[in-house]
Length: 130
Ligand SMILES: [Zn+2]
Image 1 (cartoon, helix red, strand yellow):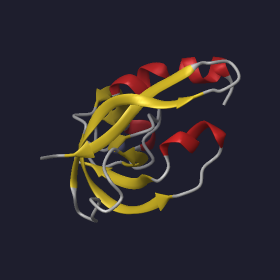
Image 2 (cartoon, rainbow, N blue to C red):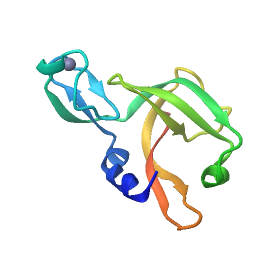
Image 3 (cartoon, rainbow, N blue to C red):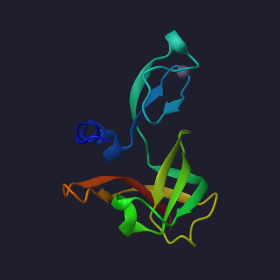
């Protein structure tokens, strides 16, 4: 991802902002500007997600590209937000702690350091709910 593209996505990454269709109540993350169910009758508004969800499936990453190397092994999971949308995210926990169905909440953490430029990328990750 280019730096410009990354910074455009910052508000989403910081605050888990997606959209919601007021007509049918469906939520979208990443944000969509069009509801596939309601089509022209859909009324799309911004929605800030509560940041709570459940692990649907996960994988343990043992080898990663240079940016993520320092983090391995780490847990990459698909989680379902309580509002409905699914997203792929890193779970901040030990690989042996993660379980399908585990409750998680969003936290704001460093995602990666770009070695060459020294740019540190921050974003939303998830951690187990105690
Ligand atoms: Zn709709």
